[in-house]
Image 1 (cartoon, helix red, strand yellow):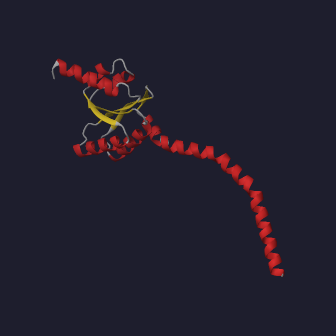
Image 2 (spheres, rainbow, N blue to C red):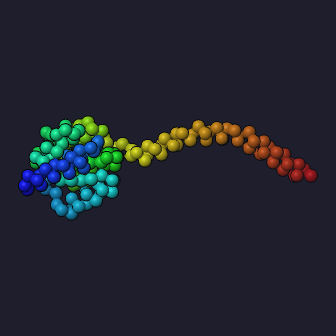
Image 3 (cartoon, rainbow, N blue to C red):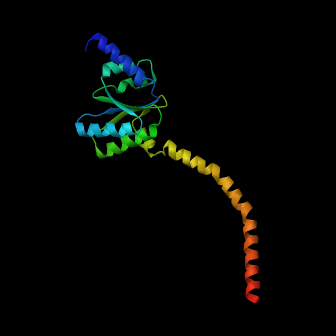
Amino acid sequence: MNRAEKTDAIARMTEAMGKAPHAFLIDFKGINVPDVTELRRQIRATGSEYVVVKNTLALRAFKDVPMGALAEHFSGMTAVAYSKTDIVQLAKVLHHFGKTNAKIKVKAALVEGMPVPASALETLASMPTRQELLGRLVGLLQSPMRRLVVALSTPQRKLAMTISAVAEQKGAAA
């Protein structure tokens, strides 16, 4: 790789991954091609990306961005799985894939631009996704209104049932 290609690669890395608030550094030593292909497919399905990086170029590219805080972990075989939106879905994919394939190891993570230890993967994977949280919020917002509607309709329903019972009694007596 000549100097121009390296400069171009550094610029592309900085542009693509430098602004990502969420990322995982992954050691993929010993994994075979079909497994990497499956991992990439699952990561892309979450709207995230998976890129194998050259450590020296990555260190230069991430020097002035939040991912630069993970500089000590750029050693050995390194891949970066990053997301610009939802880290929970990405964490769930990596956690599940790590359970089925022991050769995948998370070195470190970046959450909201802050470095966290690799052990945070399990915690993130156990959290509900953004969609699940929004569904719960909508349910909580609807709950008081639903209870109000039930409380307001109960007297009319009881009155209607009483009138119906009286009509049935009068009809049976006649």
